[in-house]
Image 1 (cartoon, rainbow, N blue to C red):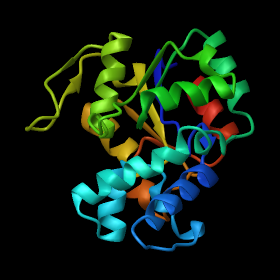
Image 2: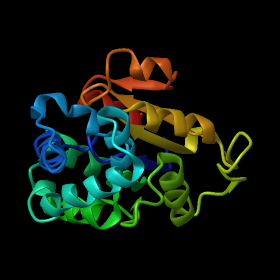
Image 3: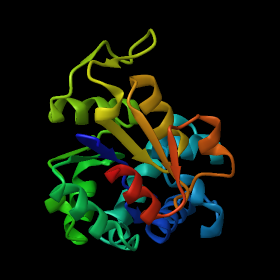
Image 4: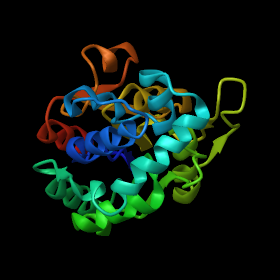
Length: 229
């Protein structure tokens, strides 16, 4: 059984669709862009600056400004427009009781991650919480994972700055990363840990398969059985 497991947050532990898309809509409106929230699901997962530039053609500076508008609504309201997936608290409790050390590794700013975990009363299951910084640095999933692994005291060599990236210095079966997007799976594979994808999040069709994860869970029940096996 895994000794340590890292979890993504959005689309993996909780369904943040309403909060994220409504805040993205709010931010785009400041640039004269009106968009239906159903067309903004691509904002779930990647760093915000990347999403504003890639999907709506904003410059990097404009995207940073849009991120400020996004957080203007997200901090007091949007982060709580969220739902925890059915079965997640029970699964985390089982893992914790089985002696597994749990962490969250999210591209969302760390204070927001902590607030959301507390809101759903699942913060008690996590020994480590790692997220992005509020100044729009440490937003890449591999960067966040490195912070989480450092805090979990999982040894690895190298860094993601150039080369093939770090390699975990413990058996692959001891550490896993669980997430719903390609960023989660790709980063886990680069580091040489078990990569677990979940279909109940926001990956597009074929997105997870393209990154060749070790396992894909269709449901929370499937996920729990795999992680506890």
